Amino acid sequence: MIHLLGPYVVAALLVGLGVMGVLARRNAVLVLVGVELILSGSLVLLVAAGATAPSRWEASSVLPLFVITIAAAEVVVALAVILTAFRHRGSIDMDEAL
Amino acid sequence: MTSLDLAFAACGLLAVVAGLLAVTTRQVVHAALWLVVALLGVAGCLLVLGHELVALVLVLVYVGAVVVLVLFALMLTRAPIGPDLAHAAPVWRQAAAAVAGAATTALLLAALVPVAGSAVERREISNQAVATELFGTWVWPFEALSVLLLAALIAALAISRGRAGEDT
Image (cartoon, rainbow over all chains, first blue to last red; front, side, top):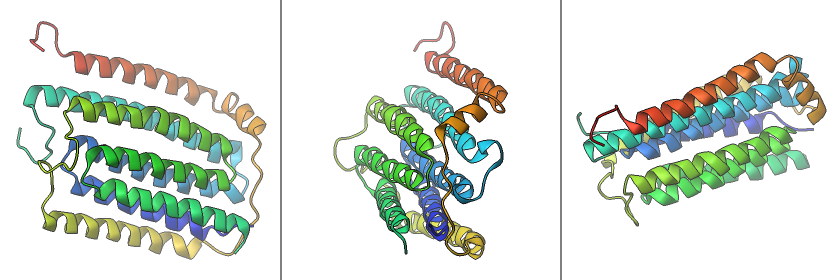
């Protein structure tokens, strides 16, 4: 037996922390850390939805796997863009005008 | 409170505290390392919820690959050892970000807590059923995902290499 309140609270807190990280950081690489936290909050929510009720086609297990893979692809491209921007501008400050 | 609830609370607390440290610490390398702890906490949460395959993939892909990439990016962008004073956000902005994060949390809690209900039986998820569905029903999305990964790989190479003839 498990209460679903726990996963919901953890997911909400992780997404809130991620939003805070995205807004407060000026280092472009650390903005990605906030994005990762938002994504992990959504993962907890997605998995909690399938932990109790039967899910059709095991979507509660398969869709998180897809989310993780897409997030990995996103991070690779984002870091490549950040590195290129750093090479051209010499800084990864998000506040700096182009 | 059952033992599953307690185990979930422990993992969730670990994830939330480490996440808070990851977004507030002034040392950039520590932020990436706290992200590892937070993701391990999330993986523990998923394990308690019964999705052991997802938890292991999370550890493999996020902790094994994504955080290493983030650390590499920090090194390549000359992250300082010690506190990052050059990129310190002003206090009013940190407070505004905290308020926005708290508002997001409150919004999600207001939407999710009413539908939580009472304790429910945890479902047993067999890896065999997941594999059957993944390579049966979901095989075309799975193949599309491999194309996406290839596209991301090529795009990352193309972006970081720059245009031909450009002085990099």
